[in-house]
Figure (cartoon, rainbow, N blue to C red):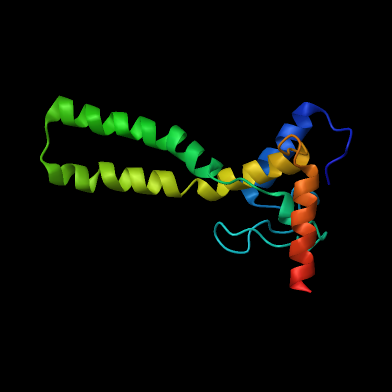
Amino acid sequence: MLDQDATPKSKGQWIFRCGLKGLCPRCGKGPMFRKWLKLQDTCPTCGLNYNFAAPDDGPAFFSLCIVAFPLTFFAVWLQVAYEPPFWVHLLTSFPLLGIGCVVPLQYIKGWLVASQYVNKAQEAGTEKLWADLHARAERKGD
């Protein structure tokens, strides 16, 4: 369990561990995901409500920046250096880009959600709006 007075280094390690393993950022035991990219409603171990989590397009953005840009440069280099037929790109570049961008999505999303929780990240001035929205959603669910 993360201590409230944790040092920045231990916070970073906690965020990385929980994000990489897909564990609850509060207790570090319960699973964060119920499906591949779908978050739990609440942690089955400690009851953390994941309503705070709003990673939006962040995982896709980071995946594209970390993986797609270097692999695109590889594909361009391959084309310029060897001028292979198009089928070579179908067998190498396209699968590498597809797999390379999709596989890290869950890890990146877990890292972003854990970061939001540990750092209490929230858009400035939206605390009341989020509280109202979640209260309304809970009333609707009852």
